[in-house]
Length: 253
Image (tube, rainbow, N blue to C red; front, side, top):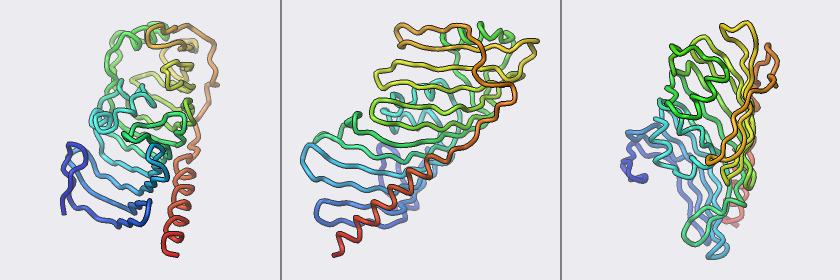
């Protein structure tokens, strides 16, 4: 069975769908498209015309990052650093929010957790990266290829917390972490853990895209720092699955 998802044709469609009163449940909907392999569980409710509830657990494997941003344009606001990478990865999102009558996100109601993983990604050249690499004294011959990336972040209302994660790039290894707001103001820190340099360097990034301040700083993370997976997506997913179960039981009464 085939279906359309945005501008993508989904094949091998499986799963279950329930509709009753003001609730729609998609349970373990799996399909394959040209962009990725996907699995979706979601709950949609319409208690009021201009206050529509959406909860979803969305898992994408072998997704091209540019395709991911094309399918979910709002993701660029929630995780703007994604547009700096090119390549294939795995993306997982568990979130809930309310929508208006035109199905636009009410960002002040957004709550969720997400993770993204990838290997052999390409870091797109940009003015921002140029300034950071200059402060961290990257060798001019350093390849802009990310060996591996594994990041987790949470969204609550207008704030996005990016938990410290490691980036390995050529002979350099760094930890990145911080917070930004959906108005696109930033407060990030980068600490070099390993490099050919005899000293350790750090960078603070703050401000907005129109007035971004990139300054040298003392390293926030120690040399032996190893980010630990918080499994925040799994916790959010369990909450959503519990809500879906409760909705199904209520609808069957």
